[in-house]
Image (tube, helix red, strand yellow):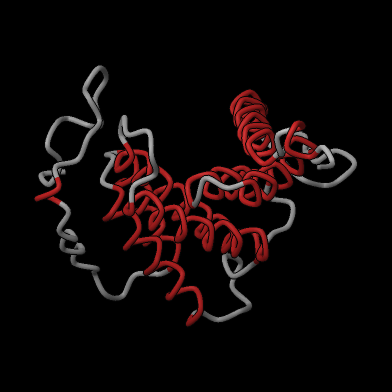
Length: 212
């Protein structure tokens, strides 16, 4: 975290990144000979330590290792792969939030991280359509990609799918932990407000529509 101008991962700090510290950090040394689950655990340790760039690298190594493993192994299934992509998406979302800080307009780095998070979240859904967290993460990523009505609509669609889920799966089969349901609802409300703002801005002036 040495590239950050302040303690952005602590409480009460102004979360702004120094422009001169935007250099891409060096990736961690990936140990050879590990299996997908071992790389995943290394990624989890980095995530807990808020070393998100390192976590991204280890989750990527886990995905690559999974592709090489015997498809008959217990770990080689859609749900496990979905978790790997989902975890990496969350790392990118966290980086996007840090890059954005207190800025009112979306920064270039925020958009970049959000774009990659969206791709990972989409892949997570593809691997396991019942992964409610993946829909939540994709909705979050959509809102960070661009301030537009179309992105807000896409975010709303994904967040509503997530909220249809239940901890036990429910009617749709989508699994959403109760612990994050409130967060999903809050983000959905935000997305709807953003869509309303764009809709109102697009409405023409009634006086200008009168016949001449």
